[in-house]
Length: 202
Image (cartoon, rainbow, N blue to C red; front, side):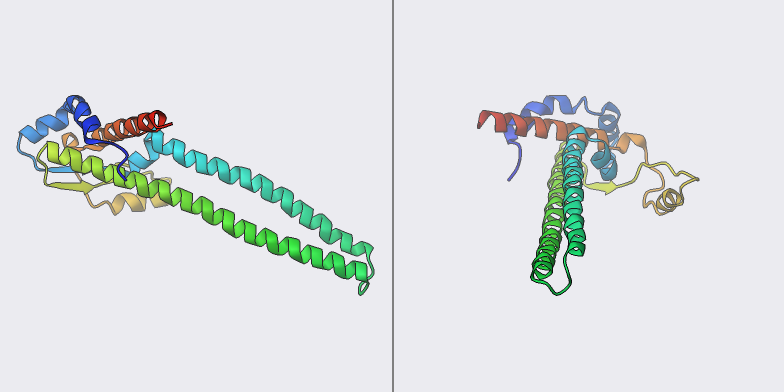
């Protein structure tokens, strides 16, 4: 389901020409190719960052609960020492420890999957929004090809950063062809419209 309506986007079209003046001017010069830094958007857009931070906060909270449950399991295992091996009390406590351990493992697997699914959903939904934004701007500026690029600068002290830099598909582009800021503003408008609709539906 789309998180915004056509009317809301049409209302925002007035500001589109102000999103990136140099970008608009470049299109007037008959450029029909643009670039977008998707990784930068995911890393820096406030709305997306807030969603990811919420999942990370939930994970930290769960880790704290998990630590407490592990401590309970440890204490239950320690209590085995108070019973004689082979006794009814030992067997009962051993069964309790096994049950606690099994329940903990299942709970860990379920919760971590739920959190991983929640994070995947964030990236899935926001990537669709980014793609919609790219399409919207491309149609508006009559662009027929948008390439993904990475604006990260290479860090000589970071080997992985250097490798990513060397492997960049786009070696050079005119900055006026970068629609990243425009897409981020498109996301702002989309999320604002979605939040407004959610409030009105309450």
